[in-house]
Every structure is written in structure tokens, then in C-alpha cells.
Length: 480
Image (tube, rainbow, N blue to C red; front, side, top):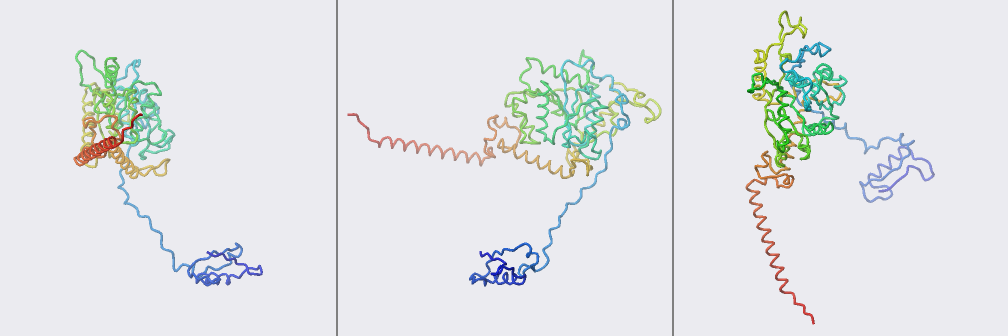
């Protein structure tokens, strides 16, 4: 590469046309006897003359630049109807005293039972379902001060400051939960996966020195079983029966317990130290299969997980339109909107209103299980919130979560060499994690392993024979 200046031999500056001629000649390989046409030279220009130079002809584009690709968008998702708040009375009042009383037969004991009974309810999306499950636990007798809603929406302090609106999937009415319903709200610093959220429960229990804690799914409302009677025992609410289970598991002779499940783990009682002893939930498996991994590891360590009963636990994908139904009150006269909460007379235990509530919850649970679109459509029911803090596209968020779920399934299979959950039945223990050949149970893999073992044994026999031959061929040293 040659370097030229635009100065003349006398120190002056070449004209613009002279510089252009140099560029043209250089392109033809005729500058200073260049024998390599087509090679380029590096020309040094001064800024004050550079602005005066025309664009050399060979550098000018032959036509307009090609157009940039136009972004292609997916079809807009079908707009779903806006949701409405499913506790109209709570939206109108400013004091907890204006809400209906808890059914007298389900009121929590005063004073509080001796045992600590914290209940975690995790939340990410769908306010209607969260509010429903919180109201259901309160009206089933759980002390509000023992309920801890964990705001895992990933919007930091936005819900606490009231910056989101009802149509936003991540909206949570912080003031209503803490002021009217009198429950606690904990906020995660960022959006956590299911496995991370479970470890957050355990960490919080350690920080507060809770030896046991309960946790519940936000799509699983509960009702006290008002038809349940135990011989020689008075009626017991869902909360009191859960306390009975806790007391049973606290006996010194109970054994190595990890958890008690009420309707699988829709409501679960956890012994904190057991979860710590196995290293907590594996956060590399974010969602599905992480429960399988955790429970199998507990069983591998000889911990037990046992079923228990405390009441009726449902699994739903929708919310009752008016949560006053859980308070079991109905107007005694006039129109509902003309009555205040204290003017509403409670019905009785095991009343027609009670059975109407159970029928409604049964229908909702059946609808969820029979929905051809899937059981968890409630997670993407809301599509609003654009322009609000931490806004996320609803369909995009759902797709990202789904991709993360699939990634977790892959991690589980890589960790244990198989995708099925029954690890102990397959003969595995905790020391097998991350050490197994993928697909080790398949016939092809087993045949290949057998061939590898035969080859290794053959090589080892050959090595041993060679060592013996070398030993025999060596001269025996003698001491004179």
C-alpha cells in the first residue's frame, strides 16, 4: 500500500481536480509506476480541503441503496374482555369493620394458638384468583396476621405504591390486602421462578426462626368441611384441623418428616430444616419437574411426605364474581346495595348457601380440568398495563415462561439421565445426579455399555499378561 500527500513539491496544496486525478490513476495502477492495477493506496487529506473535494467517480454508488428489511409482525392476539374486581363491597369501603364478619363457627381462636402457623401464598399474575384464595383462607378460620402474600410480580414497589391498574396481569391491590383484609405482603426484589420462590419461603422461615410453615397455591381456594364430624369432638374449622396436623407432626416420636400434603401440595405443611438439609429446591430446574426433583431427593434422604386432611381444597382457573359468597351472608330484607355489612345476617353451618358455594367451586374445578386450551389459561387472562412500570407484553411473557419450562425439563433429564419422575424406582440415589449417561435405560445404551465393559476387561487382561511377560523376561540380579 502506498501513501500519497495532496501537497505539491513546492509545499502548496493540489487542487480538488488534481486530487481526483490521482485517485483515478491510482485505481488503474498508474501512479508512480505501480504494476499492480486494482490495488489501493492510502491518501492523506487535510480536513480543510477534504470538505472541498468532490466524491471520486469510482466511489459513487451505482444507484440508490438497497431498502432495509421491514419488521414483520405476528398477528395481534385476540383481545380478551376486561376483568372486573370480584369483591365489589371491598372496593367501596375503607375500613375492615365494613366487611362482613368471618362465619362465627370458623373464627380463629382468641388468643392465638401456641404454635406459629405462617401461611405463604405466592403471587405473580391474576388478582382475581389471588384475592379469592386469600378470602377463602380468612373465612376458613386462618388468622389474617399469619397469612403472607408474596408479591412475585417482578414490578418491585409498583404495587405497593399503587402504580398499576386492574387490567395489568401483575396488578395486586396492596392497600386492600394490608388495610382491609389485614394480611401481610412481602415483595421479592425481582421476578423469581417457582423453584426460587420456594427457596424464598424457606429462607424467610429461617430468618424468622419458624421451624414449620404452610404454603398454598394462589389458584386453590379452600373451604372448611362443615359436614365433617369426629366422634366425641366439636366442630373444627379448616384452620384448627391444620393446627391439629401440625401438632401431630411435632411429636418427638413422629419420625423424619419433610412435609404434609393437603390435596397433593395445593396446601402444604413444611418442616423447614428438612428442606435445608437437602440443599433446597434446584433453581436450575425453574418450573415443571422441579417439584419431582425436590421430593425425590427428600425421599432419597429418608425423609417422609405424608398426606393429611383439614378441609376442602380446590384447583380452579377462574374467580367467583362476588367473594361475599365465602362470608356466607345474605340480605334479610330490601336490596343488597341498600344494606351495610353489619345488616347482613349470617346463615348457619352446613346451610344451603354453603352447598351453593361448594357447587360453584366444583363447577369451576371441573371447567379447569376439562378446558381443551389447558389448565393454566388463567395465567394469561389479562392483557393490559401498557405504559405502566415494568410493562411486559402478556403473550410474550407467557411464551417466555413456556420456553423456560421446557428448558427446565431438559435440565432435569440431563441431571438424572431420564425424563420420568420415579427416580428411586429406577434405582437412583442422590449421588447419581449429573453422573448418568443420557438415556441410560434404553436397550441401545445398555448394550453399548456392556460392549464397553467387555472391551475394558479385555484390555485389562492384555495389560496384565504383558506385565507378566515383561517380568519373566527381566534378568534376575544376583548379589556377589
